[in-house]
Length: 95
Image 1 (cartoon, rainbow, N blue to C red):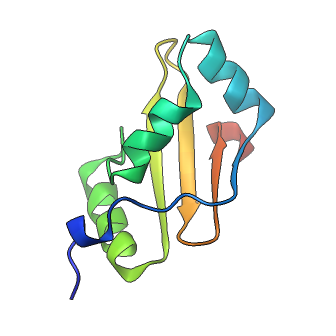
Image 2 (spheres, helix red, strand yellow):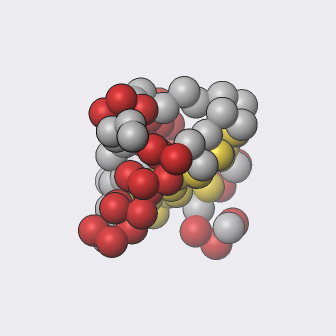
């Protein structure tokens, strides 16, 4: 069985960001690339420990993983990757 480290970095393909998420990140003076880089290396951000473990297992299985990050303006931003298919960045109310 693979380990989490053997599955990293996550290949991010077909990346999209909603206009609202893009605005929230820009308003905080941050970049989408910084959040994607953290996500790509298997850091699930502000997820609770039980969700972190769930996404570690999902990464190893090659299914889907999700991270949540808080901008400097305290806006939560979600990053969802369906492994090998697409990555989307969005705000929680756009889910």
